Length: 273
Image (cartoon, rainbow, N blue to C red; front, side, top):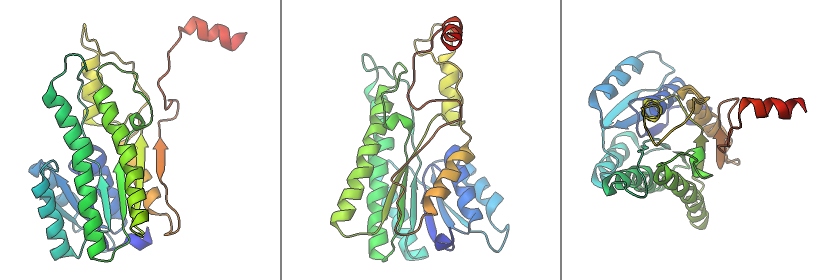
């Protein structure tokens, strides 16, 4: 991580959950972070908790920004270029998951998923590329993806979210291809966690337990937000000649693909046969 000390990172969805954990970890390694989110109060508290804690730590700049607003994103990157000398790291973490059936779901829900998980991610990546190129920075773009980006999610009414994350996987390889054609040394990595202990996932699990809910899941082995933040550090710490293109992390005791769960009696018979 020494190569990133004193450099500038932009983290989207930075005010809570995975984004907050990533900001904390980057600051610990001496990276200056521009934290983006829609919630001003949470961003303010995050910056107050981290700034001025040590000479070897980075600093946090906060920007209230809805990343689905293209002009707002452009304004942030323009400010970073003029004030901080350009961005070296982009962590596209902002995302959402909405339970919405393909048969009777709402268009606005589908649009929200795609606008944030796919289009906003790509706008931020485009602006990061332009900033890095203009400032002659061989930077690193990391997309916080999901295991849903690599297989069919088994849960009902989650296929639009599933589709958005598959799109992220495609866009990562597409970015790498276009950067290769442009002769750029900018890196693009995808980090795909399984379930992570965030407010978003916990809300989905709570809804699944409501009486009569068509969306049912069992208790899951889930990761901590720090686990994903540590995966970001691992990915960034590679030398210039090495790229972690895809890093999949899951909680020990879980699987990447959801499987049919046989009854305990069947399992016992199989194991003891």
